[in-house]
Amino acid sequence: VREGATNRTAMIGVVWDQTGQLKLTHPTPWRQVSGFVNGMVNTVSALVSTKSDIKPQHLGGPVQILRIYYLLFESPQGWRLALWFSVFMNVNLAILNLLPIPMLDGGHIVLGLTEWIRRRPLSEPVIRWVQTVGAVVVLGFLLYVTSFDVSELFRGGRQRPSAEKVSFEPPAGGTPTQTAPAR
Image (tube, rainbow, N blue to C red; front, side):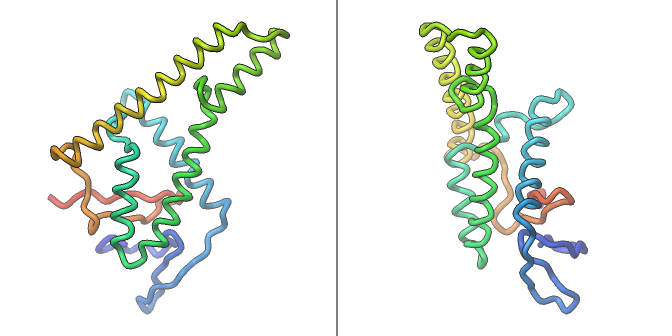
């Protein structure tokens, strides 16, 4: 909970009652998953919007994911937060996997629909070329994002809140946010 927070809504299964004691809550799986989906849609919308300050280098790759797990396990309730983060990651990866990028499942669906509409299969060289382009795009983006993670760890790149400053209080949609670092 952020210092000075007056919100009494459930926060990842934890809520403060009137006596100030910690009490576990149990939101439905549908509410949690729909909150993650809404967060993913908002993130992708912010990435493609020209009016947004969010850029691809603000995303985290494998190095950042491991760093977040490390920070979560440092807290007293780290295993609960790590479990929540694992669900968050699985839902987000499932959504990403359905994007129409040729190497991913969404791309296979698009290729299958294309063959169904054409009523004949695509030629092998075309499929090979499309799959190669998809693989290069996915791996290139992964390397691009990971390079920012590595620079953050070893060269003091992006500024992130410390473990004490991270708040996993979900807004109305149910997705966690991070508080801004104290300056």
